[in-house]
Image (tube, rainbow, N blue to C red; front, side):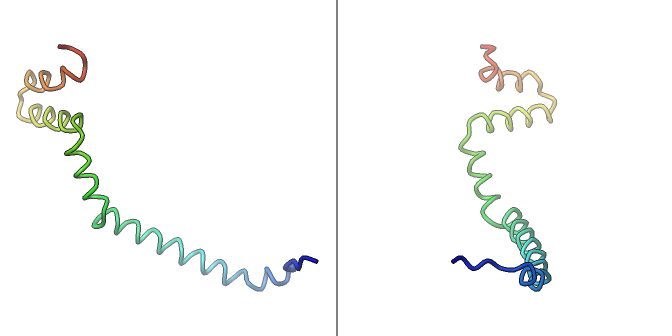
Length: 84
């Protein structure tokens, strides 16, 4: 026969379960923030943007736009937009 927990046993462990969940959520948020700021996320994002030719073209176009060289930005993005 299967031994089920009674409602009383669940209620006795409820404060401990709530404390565990609260601490777990806070710890997960802190570890995720640390990983996003100083962990592998910045490194992987930087490598992916350098390896992605579209991201490189967009960054180059934004650079030319910031310098007031709109025609050069259009030339860089023309191949991606099919305007050649």
